[in-house]
Image 1 (cartoon, one colour):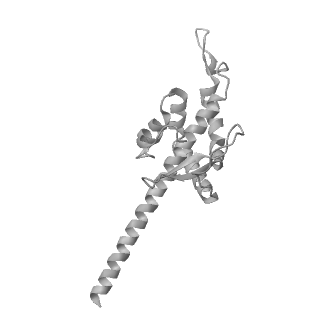
Image 2 (image 1 turned 120 degrees about the vertical axis):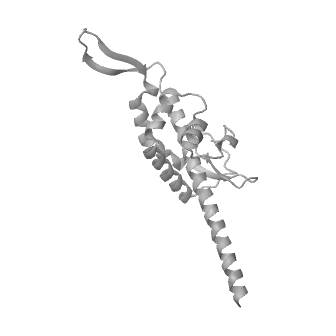
Image 3 (image 1 turned 135 degrees about the horizontal axis):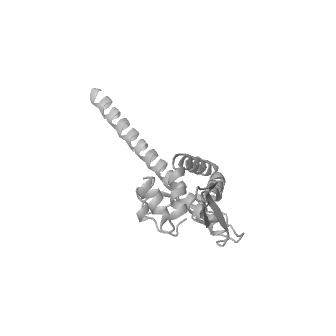
Length: 184
C-alpha cells in the first residue's frame, strides 16, 4: 500500500513538473511571438510614412549667441511618431493566428489577415480568440516594460531588429535565432 502511494505521488509530481514546463514554454512562445509581431507591425507602419517627410526636433529656445538647437529628423523614425505607432500596434495582434512547428512543437504566430486585402494561405494557422487576446496582452506588457528600448531600436536600428530587440536586449526569445526571418 505504501509503495503504491509513493508511486502515485511520484507520478503526480512528474505530471505537475511537465505541466509547468509546458506552460512556461507556451508563455515564452507567446511573449516571443508578440515581440516578433510587434517588430513586424512597427516596421510596416514605419515603411508607410513618406521617407521625405521631416520633423524639427530640439529646443526652440534661442541660445545666447542667437542660434537655436533645432535639427530635422525623418518623421517615420521620430520619437513622437514611434510613440503614436506604439499606442495602436497591439490592436493589430488580432490579425495573427497560431502555428505549431511539427518538428519542435513550438508555437509561432503568423499574420492571417492581409494588409492589402489579398488572399492568404491559412492552412497551417489556427485562429483562436484566446490566442489573439493572449498575444495582445503580451504585446501590451512588452510595450509597457520596454518602451524605451523599442523607441531606441526603431529610431536608430534598421537591420535585424527582431533578433536584436526580442532576443539579445529583452531575452523574450531564447530560441529566436533558430526562427526563419520571413516567418512573421
